[in-house]
Image: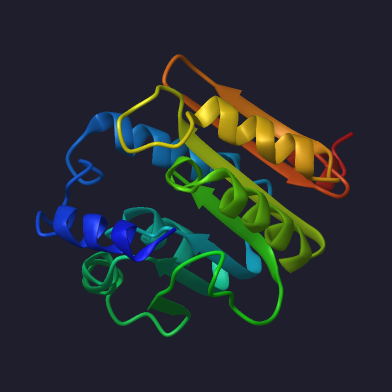
Length: 199
């Protein structure tokens, strides 16, 4: 993602909710589905790439002992900090990925509505680095709008196809409707019922 992208998104975020994350039922429903599909009640250390104005960040903060949220836009980061408030377990920082990369590893990484803004070389590097940043039983979740649009290098289906082609992790679960695709990968996929010894 180039500095031009940062300038583009800073311009968008002069409107506090440019994508309707706070106002549209579509976005609320999608966010609720993403959070509901997470197979663990709690995660030790999570990372949200592309936190936007912090709506999903709030939900993830309640599920993670520690959460890192990043966005290329300084305006988005400021809005996310306002939305999340004074939560000691959340760190929200401006960063450009894959060029800038956090230290340490994560047991949850969420990439939502970001992949198609990256040119293919950056996307492939990001996917490779995401897999390396997961702990051995970590979960990687991707969620993307499926339709092409002017600013996208590829659509969400192509982003997920690239992720699946590169990862050595098996698919844990998938939700797909006419508008968005949500998929998750982990080393040893187990249903919630399996985790709780119900089968």
